[in-house]
Image (cartoon, rainbow, N blue to C red; front, side, top):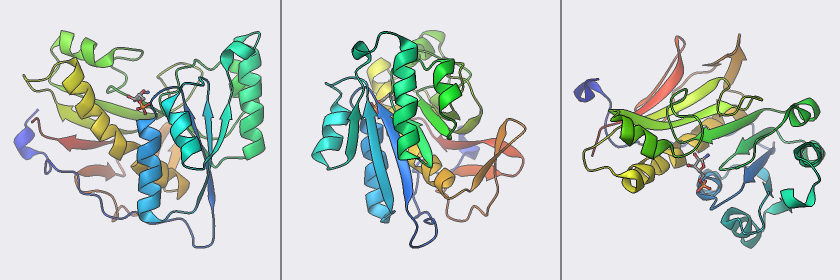
Length: 248
Ligand code: GRF
């Protein structure tokens, strides 16, 4: 892949359009751990002045994301999986809680829990996940180490719809970076995470604005793209828009 022909290495954010004035959107974010993607979403919403009601659901009481959300006055729910007799019972309660909130969108942001068919049978709202690899490559864990082990030239992050098959589901957007000879697992992970923090808000706001539609199992843009960050390749014939930065 010729990086010289790729867009500028900095990702420039232009303020995205909001949804219609006077309307609010309800956003549920599911976390298990540190919650940096949650914080990136929240910071982006604050920066743009978006009108949102938040529900943060965590399955671990030591989740830094949960603690951060409480500290910032967001509505939170702790569903400790150890309190439930089975995975299905947990999923039923999670779906019940989400249905009560009636979110416009659910974002899995580091939610380390496999959802069963019980969840998908009881909750039907749009649900997306952010994953630290260029799916379908490297589903599952330790994505950066596996990518380095394989000697890949490009790596990145993916936002995709959540389906019963873990780390599958129609891809909404990907952020791509070139792997540098200086990258070890930690450095590569940090570089990917930095991109996740731009990718996830961008996709979330596009979905909440109804800018994207799922047709025959593939996502496409259904509105003009003028306010997308530079370097982002959305087009009517490219369903896997890529955010590309050069290797450092
Ligand atoms: C991110 O790398 C995300 O892609 C993956 O889990 C990690 C969560 O990080 N699903 P954080 O909790 O948002 O900091």
